Length: 357
Image (cartoon, rainbow, N blue to C red; front, side, top):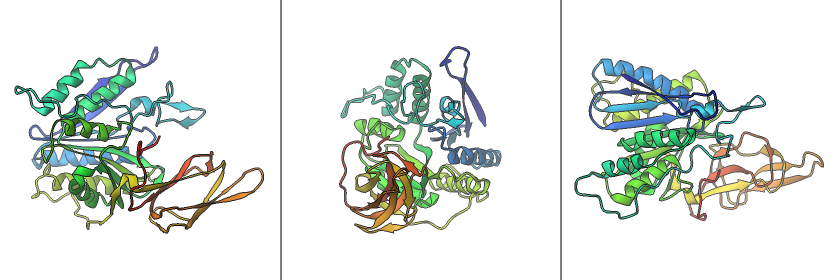
């Protein structure tokens, strides 16, 4: 095991934050796993620290067939942001920038790879030409470079109140389904381009600009249920499922069964991200739900009520298309236009930026 501690350039006078990572294995292809890019999403942070303990034992037994790099908490900037006693981990407080948006496109589509370079070497060279200015730019630059070195990238997040679900590339459907089965995902959402240049989406846009086929690394966003699903037994379960994924993908010798648990595969819903129905709050008010993550919703079905906090007037919230409810917001006081319920449908009906804020 090799431990990395990288100081970030001070974002404000008198401040100094450190990015910490652990790498296991000495040779072979790299798997890269990070969590906490949105620093208020904690289930993955706990799971990767549990995973780290298991990998230490497996490395000592000689069970690793490749390198595995873990960044359990990928955003020390967001981790330190508090306002009036509330943690603010999704956006940079100084500018409002989403920590999981704005990653770079380094090459043009169809750009020729010089004969003396591989695609990876070209991407890393282009990234090295960039000169990040400021703490957040340096953090994004470092994380993106680490991920470009890998053959498998898992960017681990969580939703507000949700089933475990994945975001993946439409051209990697079979790999996404395999990972989803190992992790127990209830929903897998596929797109060619999700919008906003999120971490895994930007990675694959760069790779697919240069090549096609199985040589392109696999990258997905894993949403480990909801923000309140932070518990020791869930962290251990998630760590063991991640081990099963790593073993399935060839990073752990199949002869070593412990501590890998082989879970029964779960057949989740696989659908285009553009088929997701996002139900907004048409006005400000208090939310009361009639559906929960995991419920099937029919077109036209009422899914909840919005009650005006001052007048008591109620507005029914209904689904237009229907689908599997896979996420809803925890906050029960909504502003007009807030996205509050998410349904995985079957027929694409959205375009443009599919991820929202």
